[in-house]
Image (cartoon, rainbow, N blue to C red):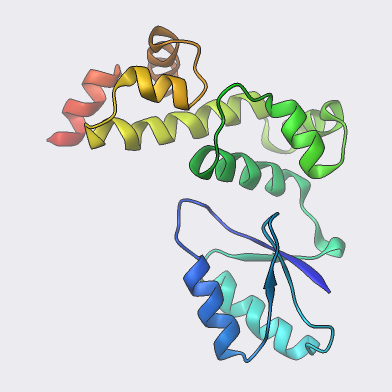
Amino acid sequence: MEYNFIYNPEKMVNEVFRKTMIAAEVDFEMLQDGTFRLPEDVSDEKLKSIQVELEGFGIKVQTKENRDIVEEIKIYIKKMVYEGDIRNVKISELLTNQLGFSYPYLSNLFSSKTFTSIENFYILVRIEKVKDLVLLEHTSLSEIAHDLNFSSVPHLSNQFKKVTGLTITQYIKFRKK
């Protein structure tokens, strides 16, 4: 039986998940796509207990019956930005391949439920990562722009100002105070 354990990649949850499964005495196999395969003989009662435990740590258990495609889009984008290489990628192709739906369908569904576009959400997530990286001081804006798929430093700076209302320099000064 396959379950997708959805989590916020900004939080370190692999250890929590592993400890929860060990405490519940349930074997599991971690698959490459963020899915975990559990043995067929896991009781509904035990699965419910695991779900409650994991939800306390921000980990959602998702089955085919309770699939939330909008949440999957958000999580996939966050995971991609925080853990993957997003240089020169087309978000539309990645989402289509990952979720198995056409991009127009995904885009319309996402917009109707969140009142923003997938592209705008993608920009917001990248700007959140920019905020983290500029405070580290060992990464140049040029490297950040390149790694987070902004066309140039001015493009990154313009998007940052549009989203936060601050320049990157103002943000750094504000955060250091």
